[in-house]
Length: 383
Image (cartoon, rainbow, N blue to C red; front, side, top):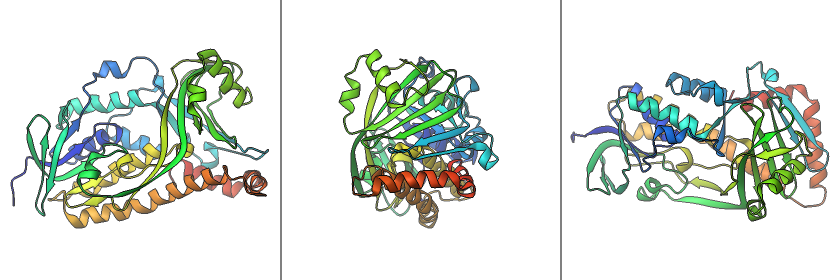
């Protein structure tokens, strides 16, 4: 068999790629991790990060096993959810409905990333920071990659964790359907006057979806899915805080902006396949979902955990049957989340006669059905 430098080359050192590299290293695999950024750990932990994630209990446990769970001083906790429709509908459920400690933990992107990269520095992973791939070629026996500085790498498998605009996906010839939502997600952090009570609040506003997620201290992170992001981005800090507070019915009193707002386009990306010869995709390279359920990074972490578990006992990390098995294992969970989020988005933006009443009545009815609420809570935490 052709001699290889590595078992796996992971392209993309963000949250999902870094977690995969650590999990494979723990399984005894020879791993190279390519990350174009050269940001220092100290830089990652400066200030408040507007990009936050709601980490499920299952994925918290995964990161803890990797010894890469960040310190609790910057973590928020979601103990309950309060979801409002656009015409009086409402549903509330809590971690206690599922006999759980929390529905999720709110963690800033940079703090999660810093924890992962600190562990990478202590691991056996070959971390190539500032390195970018230029060419990829695969054969039945190996994958070969050329970097932009001329270095040549080879491995049994190339794992693409390089985001929604994946270079690996393109090089592997894996086509994907892309459905733009016509919305952008506007994110920002705020200090709030009233205690948030560890409650995640969400409003389906008809023209958009607004979420307030509890952060450490008396702070919240906002995610506003809107068709007119510029209308928010162009506001002054006091005007934006007032607009966000009013949209949420002043549930937490006056707000004060902590981080400049940023916007990113929302798209549903569905590749025809997530594996090819000597290639596997994970994270946003393999799928995206609307952020209304906060499950994008959770799906990515589960990609990493399940792929690493499959490869742990294999002599050939790029074995085609293993890759096909990975694709089958992930298909149902990903499709369920994509269809569920997409369906909710379409339902709460429909103006067809009777639909507004139906969606709000459905929320309120579900709120009165305790067994169904318990099941929703269990689904929210990944059970």
